[in-house]
Length: 152
Image 1 (tube, rainbow, N blue to C red):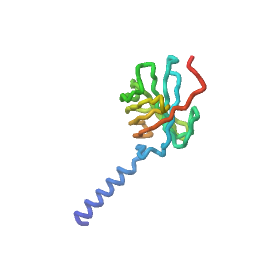
Image 2 (cartoon, rainbow, N blue to C red):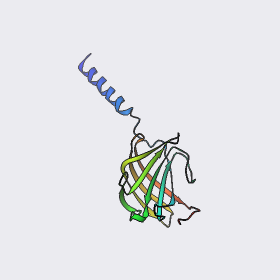
Image 3 (tube, one colour):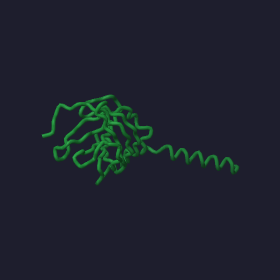
Image 4 (cartoon, one colour):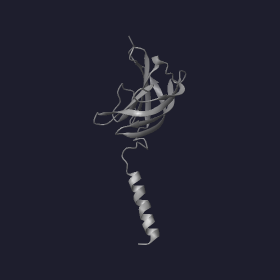
């Protein structure tokens, strides 16, 4: 085998191995839809959950698979475009829920979002790393659906 063929074969093998990873959610596993809902935080204060879903939904819990980003607004975390850290000890939390109902909490990452009261929409981006689900990089335009419950 010539040097050129050998080099070409090695490059092809490297590309195949690199592209066969199942721990990367790029493209975004078909998570093409977004919505958000106001929620109650741990101290019954304001919070928001942003859902990245495969199908359109405004149910409190969409059909899996989906990613859920949770921001407790009582702790000074505002939806004003600032980057919030995600993960253990972070300012926000995220979970990826699989079709079998199991969930994979985010190990780390970040989310930045702006809330538009006039449009009732949260616009932002997320860069999230999950232990088994992999990497999710997403921009979102999440309409905020009204909730029927209020925090105590």
